[in-house]
Image (cartoon, rainbow over all chains, first blue to last red):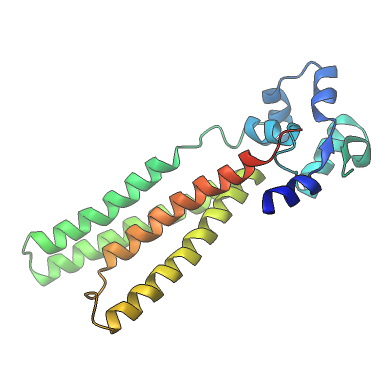
Length: 73
Length: 132
């Protein structure tokens, strides 16, 4: 089933933790990344996997390697 | 940085605007009994209005973030595939004599409706993914 395969390949991430450490709201992070708050929410909850450019942007923002933030499991 | 999606308008608003843009020239051209020059003028004004709407949509698309661009692309894909299916079916039934010739207004309404259905479907697919 399509939904199952999407779930199986979804990327786990530490975005919520990293954001909380900096006491940023989702809107704060969205502003810094140039995306909507809804997009940040969907990435955090694993409903949407970011593109590679956005993942790099996240990594640069938090000064970490991409693989330290996003884990394909 | 400014949130690129802060100015998003609900897609039903776009639907209503485009619907009115379709109906108004249709009513003016068909209903006013105007001279042919005036009819041509109304038609050209309608074309210009649609060109402006298409340009606004392209500008809006470029301002969207990647999630919303993906939704937009999925809705366009749904509208294209669905319209193709509907109109091939209609064309074949028209050839067989079951249906009357298709009017352009209906063609546009079907595409608009399918775009809205595509947008809703794309959101539903994302929302159905299990939260982690």
